[in-house]
Length: 204
Image (tube, rainbow, N blue to C red; front, side, top):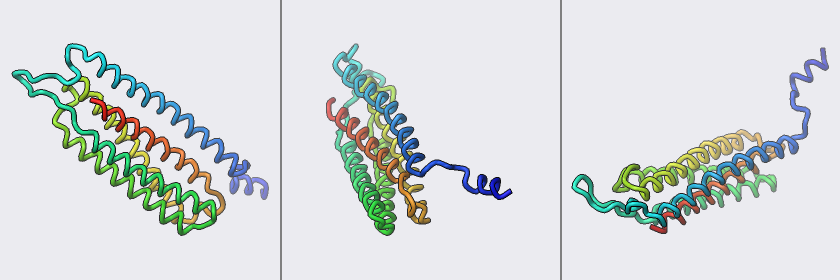
């Protein structure tokens, strides 16, 4: 009876570091797949730009529609900068929890979450500011693909950052903090992917 009760109370017999290492590997493999997708988009962008088949990269004006013009990449760079602030905040949160500072973990974790929200707001504003639709030529289609990818990454980051901050507020990371390490890995990739998108959109 006592053995069975103990088994139900502690179903995981592995050390938290072992569980954390396995979960971290899972996140890394997910990122690797995402990297392949992002790089394929980067290749497609520059390939279509170089080929400019039938002058459809930035179509000229027609009787039905005006000419399509490229938008400034400054908006993408601003979003990347805000995301980088969130990454820096989360790195400080991670460093604080490694030092046993729960207050610093909660404070910087909250800053990281708020940074992700600001980045989402800026990205949504970008959708409303562009003077074209997804079907307005190759450049417009690529712009939307980068923007949608960035939006999905930011939404995931905000969700993860909120959960990370809430768990730290509840004091869950006092014994171990491998969850915070995993979230930091995702933050790094999210900023890198946003950087790749801003870099590509700088060439029109």
